[in-house]
Image 1 (spheres, rainbow, N blue to C red):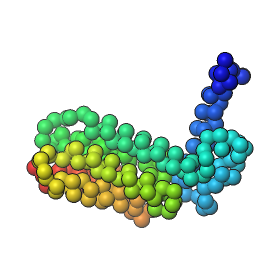
Image 2: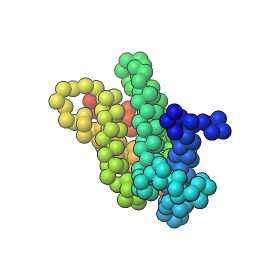
Image 3: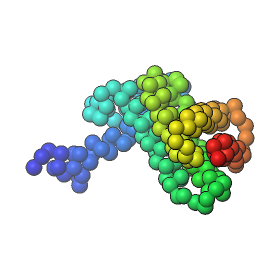
Length: 206
């Protein structure tokens, strides 16, 4: 029997490794997205989890790999939430556009506001964390593609692409300002304004 399949205390070695990895990821999320002072370090993560560095290096080659894994995890959650929100076609015309826009905005706001750590990791960490600079720039087009799919289809219309990119930039800056406290508005007002931006962008191409 392979070593990873052997059980000890009712769990396999593979299960225990997976559980340790999840603890390390959660600690990384706390440190990277918690708004705390000080860098994310292997020592800080191990101290928070109560695991030794041996177990850290069992899952990650270095602290940058952990930071990137935390970011990828939150990015995947955000992309899934948005894709699921716009999956339902809804009624035709503006009512359908507005319904999808509201569903998408609410889903994203829930992710980054209900757990502010997720918002800080997704939107703020790439601005200050060198390990995320490149990946943050690579993730933006994926969100622009989701927006692009919601705009009326006109073959060869480059304006649609420019609108999608501009809209992602505008929404990102709004969310960043909200998260870091520069934008003092209620959650409901934030959602309503973002929905108006999305619906307005759609109307440019109808």
